[in-house]
Amino acid sequence: MRINPVSDASEDENGSVPVALLRITLGVIILATWADNISKDLYTADGLSGLISWLFSEDGNGSSLGFYESILDSVVVPNAGLFATLQLIVEFAFGASLLLGAFTRLGSILAAGFFVSLFLGYFGGEEWIWTYVLLFMATVTVLLGNGGRRLGVDQWLHGSRGRSPANLLW
Image: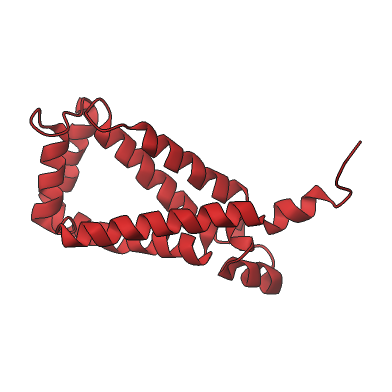
């Protein structure tokens, strides 16, 4: 017997207020961290290279995933200026996307990838890595729960344009 006779498909399609509140919270967390990282100069070539060095140094975090360190050392560090600028822009973009509920599905996918990257970077070190698992799962919940379709720009986009191409934007 169903307690709520309202169709579940409507809420699935249009999102829910609790998932929207989770989305807004994630956006605030990401943008607050982004602003703090600006003050620490982490979005510069030297700042990003220094962070990567600290992550894997025994005097720093002491992360243990050698394959990930190799990728960062061979791809990111030699191009640290480019990657720092990209991170500055993309991190702000998915934080704003989540906060405003605009192109939330794409923003959620980018944020989920970012949290996986942080998990790998901090794995085996001093940082409590399960924070990144929680953030990842919250982002996946927003993605699967259509978090932007309530209390967000995506609510208007979905109402006026229907589903986005491949259902990847809103």
